[in-house]
Image 1 (spheres, rainbow, N blue to C red):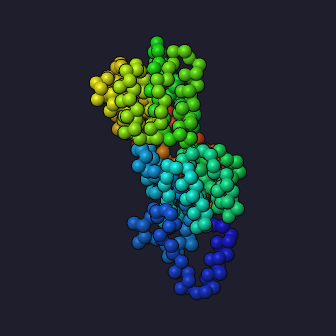
Image 2 (spheres, rainbow, N blue to C red):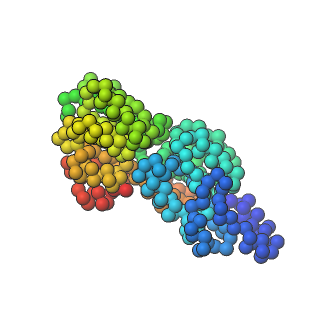
Image 3 (cartoon, rainbow, N blue to C red):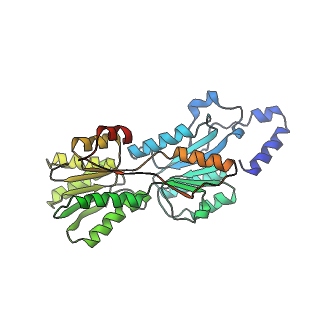
Length: 341
């Protein structure tokens, strides 16, 4: 806890026991939802004993990955584990920054951020630092001076893209005619997964981008993009979708048009995130590739916070999650059970 809060607590103790027992705030910020309301029966007598964290995340309904990520955070940052956690969600960078400013006003001890976009964070992070609030990034990187945050627990999105493109190259097609469906523009996941493909297309004459559009992680929009290409009569043999939900939407358009897809079929289907249902599509041979994106960062963050509370700096400023890609020709049921989210 910050020194100023400790002093405030000592002052309140001089006012009597009633002040000590009356300072519990289980409701959280007015701009966010408390993650622990259902556990209020087991909470300590005073929220001042807890580490106060404000957690800013993307919409948990965005994808299976995000649902798993949010559930992992809520299961870890509980009152039983020593936290008073409030949660705020948005897919828009400006809204997330506004939530961060509110959490700073609420004097949280830690600000945990999965940024919707990589830019625009410097000012609010400087404000947090001025208020002695420690910032930890998770899931996504941002463009900011690393002195403004304690640690970053992230996936290597660029490597995810490189691994996927290397796999696609290994298929040795005579010509690659690609429908590229992007996530939210400017997000670390979109930048990383797009970068490797853009680079390859720019260098190889037989790699052609039939269309490149954002579906903002949405299955229905992805279906509309693919349907538009089908209606145009343009030929394609690869769908490179930057998450599983968009791949599913793309496949829905293929099925509607009776276009075969998967192993040995007309169209290669690629997704990211490794939802269990998506890996099952690989196992059936209906999809060809799925890139892993590990959603379970909460335990890493918890360890870092405990170290910081004990005066110990994180061993590394950046912690990269271990990830892999899965091929329909080699995936097993054990892989589905172990890695599916």
